[in-house]
Structures are given as C-alpha cells and as structure tokens.
Length: 274
Image (cartoon, rainbow, N blue to C red; front, side):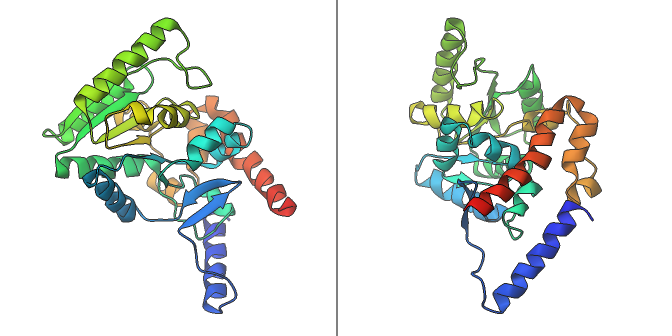
C-alpha cells in the first residue's frame, strides 16, 4: 500500500467520523509540530493573493514540507519565519500523517498558477536566486509562454546558514539586488535561496522591499529550466515523488531520509508527549 492510498483511507475514516458528529470538521488553519499550515485550495490562495495585491497589503507565502518542519524544530529563526507567513501552503504528502484531510498543494504548481495570474493581471514578476543560471533559464521559458509578462531575474547574494551574506562583497550584491527589486517594484517576488535561507531571508527583508508579495520556491526554477526532471505523473499521484527524487538525485538521500523516515517518527513521539 502506498503512502497516498493510506492517507486517503484515513481521510475517508475522518470524513465518516465527521458525519457522525464525533469530531470537528477540518480547520482551515492547523499546526504540525508547532508550525502553522493552511488546509486550503489553489483557487483560494490565488484569490487571497489577488485581494492582498489590490489592497497593497504586503504578504509572503511559504510552502512547508516534512523536511522543513523537521528543521524548524531546532531552528528558531526558521520557526519564526514560517509562523509569521501570511499563507502557509502544505507541500508534501508526508504532512498527511498529521492530518489525512490536509489538502496538499505543490509549490511548483502554485508558482505556475501565480505566473498565469500575473500574466492575466499584467503584474510584474521578479525571480531571485537559484543555482548557476537556472533562474535565467526559467525566466526565458516563462517569457516564451507569456511574452507580454514583465519579468526580471537576478541570482542574488550567496547566503550563509543564518540567511546573511557570507562576505562583504556578497553584502554589496544583496544591497544592489534589493535596489534592483525596489526599482522594478514587482507585484510578486519568487525567492529560491534554498531552505531554510529563503524563508528567513524573506521574513527579515520583507519590510525593505517594494513589492506586492513574496513566495519561497525552493527548487522550482530547476524544474522550469529543465535542469531537474519532473516525476512521472503516476508516481506523483500515488505519493512517490520522494522516491523519484532519490533515484534521479542520489545526493538528496539525507534530505529524503529525514522527510520520509525521521519526520514520521518525530511526529509520532510529539503526539504521544502532547
């Protein structure tokens, strides 16, 4: 039995209990190991983004997955950054261990929906970060699909574990890219510094940025650029995307192990102690 099928069975059981009036209905806001998540839908997220931008209400979106939530248990800055986000989209089927009814929204798919919305609304978009030239390649592919979309890209500074520039020259780059973003004034800023740096960086720099809102996107630029292969559809549908990543990127073994093995054990003991 796959993880996804297991979660579906648990979800059906929860729905049955709800119909009997023995449990509460699914909450829009939930906590997993002390981290806020929103059990919502993609249309609701898009509507919320559009509303915030139209009201000039600056915001940021995070996409916690099992690995990120696990990391937050020993990183207070990351925990604060995640719990301060305006929208926290659960990204990773493993989170269903905590709540089988949780609606999982893949970060890269939400990114593409926001790009479509930006094109429709004539918003400006800024891509920040990414490894090597993947940000530039992603921007080129997006521009090919949406030729009228105003898009700018910058690799940005190299950050340390604390999400601070690692040298004085990188501090200068950070200052320059901040000025570049503010001059462009995009409605949406997508940040790919890798977790937990991207979450902490947005949280600590949001007030300095002349933007509508920001979103952490992790390795999304790689997939858009084509430097990383997407899993087969059937694999993603049954919750085995983690296995695909392990096959195609063996160097991710440690990250996959923490997400698939360590996180469920951590959550199990958390539930017992609480």
